[in-house]
Image 1 (spheres, rainbow, N blue to C red):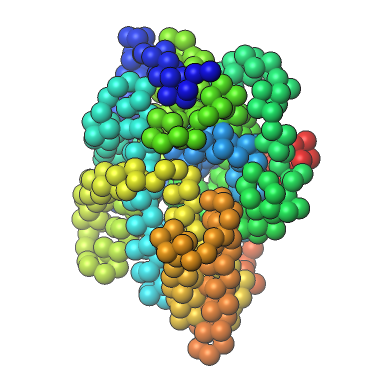
Image 2: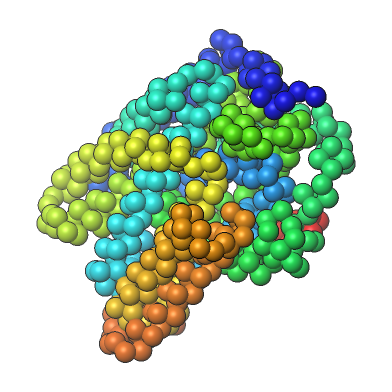
Length: 552
């Protein structure tokens, strides 16, 4: 039997791209830059550049909403963890996304859109105080730079292995390309490119799933080749921790389905920004709902290929070196199954996913920096043109800083572990701050700040003690992030309540439009029934339930 190194060497040898594959990649670059040039003249104000002038149709913002999420985590990370944990990884798409996406559409978007806040930190300022806004703005800026680096590193890693280009070269090529098309068209350019990239990713991954399943004899053949029944169930083995995730259903439902999921989809400005770019409130509410439908079916594009390649390379992830890591599951599957031409399309899909994720983080970073840090603390009364130029300058700065964070990402053996650690630190406590602010009018400005601060410190401390001090273990990498998120959320929730009970709340007049019970709820009029938010949410929820039953 061949060793893993011999097999992967053969896979890489078969992945030599021809001129046809390079041509497909080149066309993608030209089209993407062309969108930026076409939109350049529309960037006349800071709102045009940073918020798209709130003028885009919901189908565009909806696909961009999910497209901005299709970065290294979604493609490499999900495929990698599918090879490591099996079909349970679909929890990150289903219970780890769908309920939260429906919630953000029905409950959160009216608050965001109605408050006219430019960003999530801006909303926190209105509900709590400047200290809460400032802390969140800084922590979010750090998060976006770190996650942007993940996409840079992922692109460099894949093309280093498959095309023989150096890691450093690939990082800088990705950086320059992203910088050019964001500078040309701002958020609008990024959103339209994310829409294009969504279709490219589907076109690149769908043939991989189909060809791979045919080659292994369908779903039954795949189960026989992998020969691990636990790898093909979502819930059947979760009464205890004896499952691939190493965490029971309580940890999955509360840690992932509630804290991590709602913390990301409801409070992460990277995705919220896409909905805020919609043309009106109804379109903003539809945006997450439109995004929910492709999200429901993405496990079949990103997770099944990870299972397929593990049937070909059963020792993947069991020896040292990034070439043997689970992170290479999707690239190796493409190299193994795709012929010339189709390989170019697959590589373009990977490239699109990395560019999408990186651009999404950079555009969110430049908006938060310009509106919530620079304008709030450095120059409050400058002209709009000044903020437009600042947005462009900080785009360049953000790209350069992301190059540095790419090397931080390179130091982690698993992209998914790195991303989940970041989300548990930054998003989990923020969710408690949001929920109390929206649904409990007694929560006070300093209660929100102290709770958010202590929740974040708690999560960082738990991660450091587990990773470097080895004082305790919360289970597997997946289980650890779920439990750590739940603990950090609980700390923020409890301390926000305690401090609020001893500090002065805001008067009711300042809470209108910010607290659910004190906000007028005008009905969004939709003349077409299938565009109504509750109809779309009901259909998505029904599909979600059926899929969980099928793969129970």
